Image (cartoon, rainbow, N blue to C red):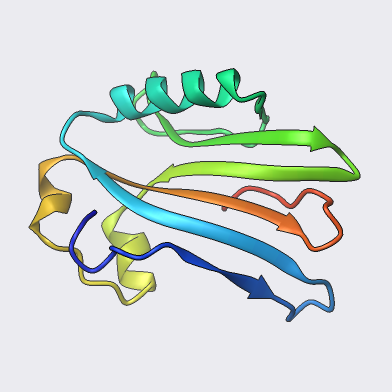
Length: 124
């Protein structure tokens, strides 16, 4: 785990009147984004997650800025979002990344769903 991001973050938001459940963890991989992307695409497919159109491309044509998958039907679904962290994202979170972020692809894996099991959207 990268320094300062050792714990799994999980909780529930209720600020919109609807309860949203989430769990996320931050990782650093010493390889490149293509390796991370390939790993999570294969792992998600093996576990039955379906790719979502919410996957966003980065400035490098073959490397997405994020991957988004759904599991379950529309009225009982969860979203899996794998997204690469940027300095801007970490600054907005008021996080101070350790040196391990400069040696590889820093990314976050998040799972979200509403409390009634309906899908939410992947991170913007």
